[in-house]
Image 1 (tube, helix red, strand yellow):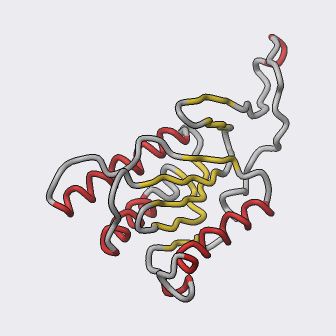
Image 2 (spheres, rainbow, N blue to C red):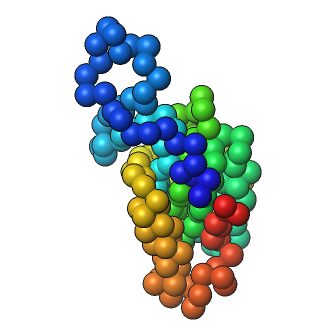
Amino acid sequence: MKCLSQRPSIRVPVAQTFLSVSSPEPVLERRRRNLPHWTMEGSCYFVTFRLATGTLTEQERMIVLDHIKAGDKQFYLLAAAVIMPDHVHLLLRPQTGYSLSRVMKGIKGVSARLINQHRNRTGTIWQDESWDRIVRDQAEFEEKLNYMADNPVKAELVKHIDHYPAFYSGPD
């Protein structure tokens, strides 16, 4: 899967000494707002974000999906996306030079503006914070991908994922 390909090996320095400052090893960064956020250059992430209130129409879900797909390859490598009526799941890897927080700001900010334009109004669309997790290996990647594909079926929006238009799974 393209989200996991080209990922550096995970050997995270516990503490950085002056000798390890120039090391090309990926560094695990931890920060916290309301939720914990762990990031590491070259990682694939499973990301979830929710609407502040209400639900998205089918047309609005497609607006969000089209915007997310438009950023593929330029800002991130998109492995999969599912846009549900009240939340979104993504599997992606930010391109070098783009942090996950910057990618999410672009996805949520622009999609909120597009939805508001569609609704002919202004206001908050998404909750402020997203939930994210570094995908550790191929098995976890496949678990998250299957979870995403099952989401519309379990919500009884469709009988099979092939019939859900707001689902995308990349070619790799």
